[in-house]
Length: 249
Image 1 (cartoon, one colour):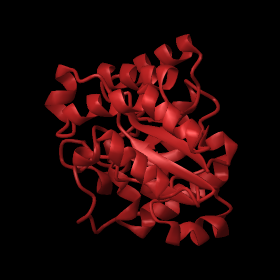
Image 2 (cartoon, helix red, strand yellow):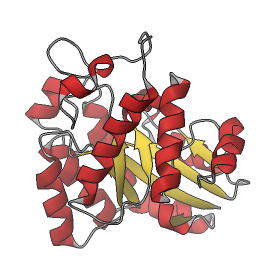
Image 3 (cartoon, helix red, strand yellow):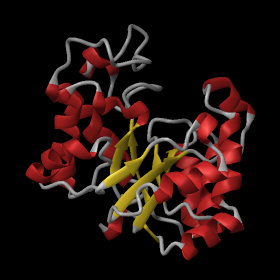
Image 4 (tube, one colour):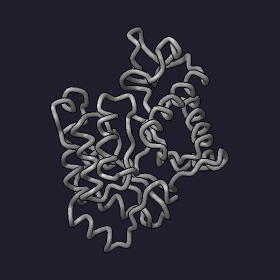
């Protein structure tokens, strides 16, 4: 079994970025994805470069902060203050060209700081709510030759048809009350017959900024503790689990 341990939300706050980088250096996290429209994106990318850590992809955003493009260029994606809507579930007037244009702008901004992103995924899994989002992401992934997180293995055939790489399985349940070492181990063992798996995680050092902007906060420090645990490292070794990143699929 080969597993990618991917930490979402890089750049969300300073504590999130530092927690993720330390999880990569001291623990089992093999990859992260960055929010290019966040206040701490540039600082986080600079710190990653100093440490020689470049297994970083793009955490495409449609539900947090402001867009990279001027709001007037993508009016259906923002509210009257120029921010993304907090939820995309009820959006109805979605235009493929607007979506693709903004997501492409986010990719291009990332490339200014790292020319070789590992892959794409989405904040709050926004591309699971409307087909137009998934279409735009997969089209861009094909254009840039990047893998994409697949939230449901039943959709893998769509990725294959577009020529987009992804893992065969995914673990999304290492979250909130499931952030316990024994549950982590069982989640991994339940997928041991699958060749390649991604496990989504959110390690961080909890800072004031995180407490003020995210309801998912204190669990992140517990995630950090588990993902840097020596017993977890030994568990993976003992079960023949190989740690990889998206460049390996």
